[in-house]
Length: 311
Image (cartoon, rainbow, N blue to C red; front, side, top):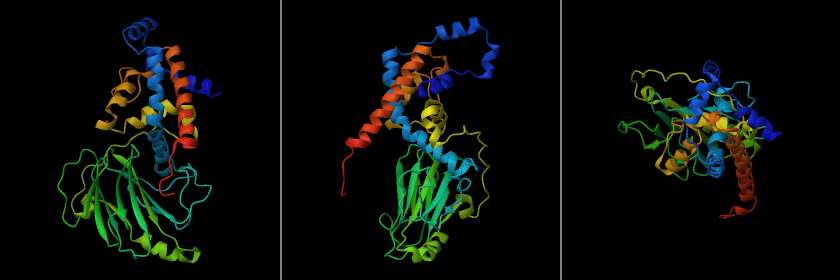
């Protein structure tokens, strides 16, 4: 069933191709040079392992801030959502959440301008952290007890293309490799009766555009985006379609330049050599087999390849 669904999805054509004659399509495909079947299968396997966290992150973004009917929706972009509770089995968008650190979530859109994250002074005996995660799922910074201390402070989060100077009253600047990124606030809960104290700390968390922080006019808003709908549950059936969509918002970094070039060679991602749907059925089948193999490699690694570090 998996292969049938995925092959049907990947073989689909856009409506705009209806206007192209069969002969024109044949000429178009004949002029393309795709890697051989073995190389395609190898690249597709690498693409699955590289792209799995990127796609999962994209799906979580859809569920948290885009699809208000997802059952996991938190708040719009650039708005903090505080949870005065511990997560349960019903919180399925992210696996294995903590049970002793109520969460506050913020998904940042850094396209128009940077964001300023402000934290309150927190008692020394209460752990708190602010984890900055970009669309590559790189942890590009931390604020909190262990990283920056327990004093109140303002921190600037900028996108990959921002080139301004650090404003006064900003403690530190954090740069995301992508324009969209998740910020996760964790506040320690000592026991059930302690929740009102957690809520007080959460009330001190603040996120605002840099222009608001500086009391300056805001720049033009970033254009609206028609995101491809995605859920964490649907990834295995639609993986490469989701990867294509997610990579639109993940600029190439020096670390992933090589794998991104390989993806482009089989029609995946921005700057691709040609559309994935123009691959032959044999190439598509090779890609689907590689995805299943990559999925097994990930499962095998999680089963036996990880190492305990400090327990």
